[in-house]
Length: 178
Image: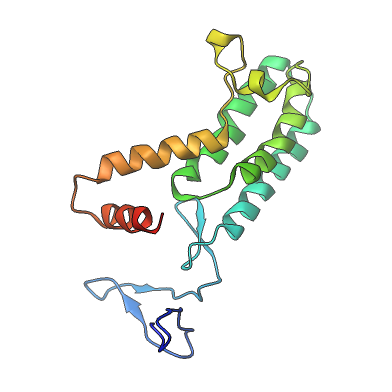
């Protein structure tokens, strides 16, 4: 809603009550306040686009994984497999829809690396340039979440810019804001 001063704001449900239905009217869509998040397709999404709930959800997942793996007696190869196939995939999956800062991405990875590297018989204080470096440069080839997020955003823009889709419209609006 645009106000008299030219700034726009979201309306609360109590200010503008109505129900949303799919185009054929067979399914009612749950309405959320702008500050509420709901998990959809594995991503905590809020109508106002803020990432606080998504970050908290992923932090809870990393802490749960760390607590679970810390108590196991794993062979280093099993620990590496668990790191690369479970928690890193969980963290990478929603990145195309997130806008985490570099610090937030580091904070997400910190408990994972602090827990998993010693289980893999790797020094936990190994420089992050080596942790995220490629095998070619003698690194561990673990993803840098911030770089993965950036790459996924660019791939998404390239994939949708020539199509007439809502995703293209959202990308154009976001680029105009920048």
